[in-house]
Image (cartoon, rainbow, N blue to C red; front, side, top):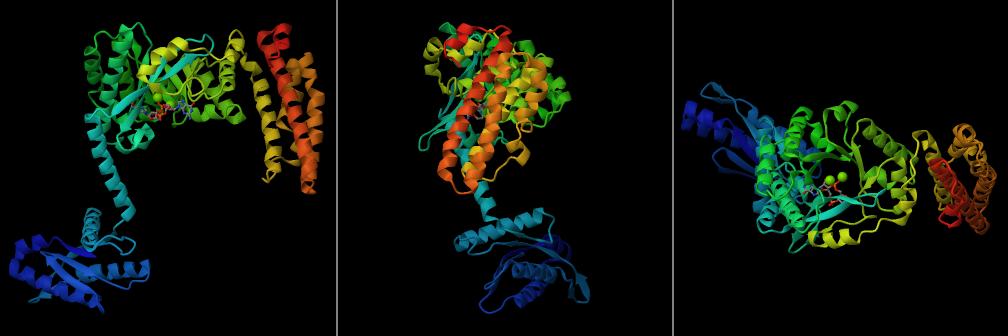
Length: 537
Ligand code: C2E
Ligand code: MG
Ligand code: MG
């Protein structure tokens, strides 16, 4: 432990050093009461004491001892009939929890003592090895990243955004990478969060803007005029001179039409100060730069926020897109965001599209622009021209390109995913999980979510269509198989249960096929027999 007296200098200045010395002696005497056995109490210098106390079996004891030391220190000293009062701040570190060498232990106790002072004095503070480690790691990373920035170790990768309906490449997002000489190519998630609240992020942001503009200039000269978006951190966006900085960057690349530059801001960044952000957006507009709201839906935006932040584009966060095919709640959320964007006349971009099927669904929901591994992974700038030249959209997208989906048919899409979910719950049960279906949902074909839709909205809207009518017997068979599988598994007849699972999966495929036909029929309003014969469903 390291004890430093609070306000001792004042006492010295006011009453003279001779008196100060006597107070020190009095306090030293008291501290000795705490020591036992081979404990050590030492005056390190000035008004600083070190206490090396052994054999403290648990935290309780440490805390009680710390309290005692503080109260001993703050008890008034009587000298020549006068009372003098002082307090102390105590820093503590515990060996072997803090398994450092003696010098370092002393330094840690010293750091903790400073924190006790900062916390308001006359208190103790326990050194937190983990916290210290983190702080140190952050400091090292910050230094290393600053060096990396200067040494040209940062690079931008580019990820295409495409229009699913037209097959065009409509933009590229610049994504930061760190070519670390020892650790290889690092993703921004491993270093940016540590510098987010530091000015270095502003420097990096400026580098990113210039780098992207330089790249735009190169591509532009080569005849490739694709817009590039850059990500801007909250701290950078909220800098008073952000707009000026962007203007200077643009001026330095006169060959680049400013309309090719787009800024992506995190929803949460704009949330901090909507009025300021609005001003920034409008000022940048006047230069020709446009904006999108990144990771939309993950912040805590209210609807008024959508009104106040005039960014032209919303990027639906990839966490919603990831499970859009499996989770009807995510599907509803995505649909809701697309509806909002449409109502506010914003463009929507779906992030994290990994499969062609996700693309089909998004297009049908009214989101035509997508970005994700399913289209292309982020790649070095040098690979972009060849990729753009060779890009072929997924053939599935072309099939749906001419169809437009009515909002009122949306429950038909959800029904599909509700059925998939039901089947998945049976599969999970087979794998040993608890059954996440109520007896009604399991056995009664009216009571599962698909059934709810089928016998209400579905029947009203599509009851006259053959594709719809053909669903019923298959769905009833599903609800005969489900309970049977559950029974078989309960009674330990795994083999037979597994056989029936195969039958169930076949029924599921039939339902999806019929639903696909129904959806296509609804979306095009005319059936195209040749289309189905081609075996595309
Ligand atoms: P973001 O702006 O939302 O960028 C999209 C992230 O999702 C990128 O990760 C991208 O590689 C990844 N991604 C794209 N498609 C898929 C997909 O289909 N599946 C999955 N699982 N991921 C996909 P990355 O490059 O690691 O960047 C992460 C975040 O770091 C970015 O999220 C952005 O917020 C931030 N960031 C990236 N570059 C910069 C930069 O230059 N400046 C600042 N301030 N932040 C940046
Ligand atoms: Mg982004
Ligand atoms: Mg994002």
